[in-house]
Amino acid sequence: MTWRKKEKKEDETPTVLTDLMSTDNDFPSKAHCLVRLYGLQEFIVITPADRNKAIDSESRAKVLLSSVSVALTNSSSSIPVFIQIQQPWRQMYCGTSVMSEMSVEFDVIHLTRIPQQYSHLAGLLDVFKSKLATQVTPRPTVDVAVRFTYQLQEWVNSPWPQEPP
Image (cartoon, rainbow, N blue to C red; front, top):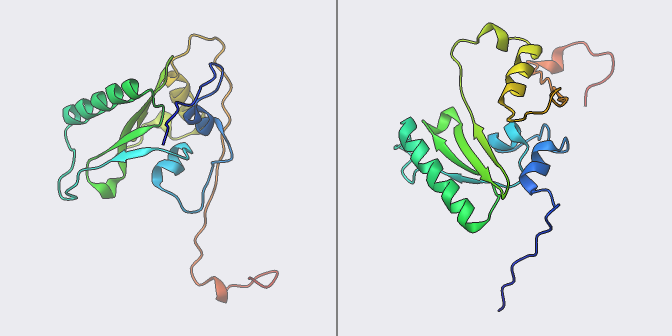
């Protein structure tokens, strides 16, 4: 068996960037929480082997993420790698994807109290744009997609303008 390294075109966009920019990956019906958050089609998740032991210190998570970055750089892989932090039920991750000219950092946070600027779309867009490491002015436009899901209790007994499925 012969292994050949795939020739990569210099102008080829890495899959991770294509996934992040694609609207085709928005709102999957059933998917891993990272797919729902970032729209990624492929990624690696590192979790403790013992589910009772969590990566609960920030310094430990940073050391692991740094090691992952070195491994990705050495392997020339741009596949995003995430480390599960805190308890699994919290679904908190930090991750990275390393490319030849850039890297993408991923962080999931949970806020117990929502700051005022995060309670409306304009404030969230300001936070998002401030996280972009770009010197371009004006900043690039951002597309926003929203999905509302309603859960109806006893929907069969409710009056409907037409027969429900």
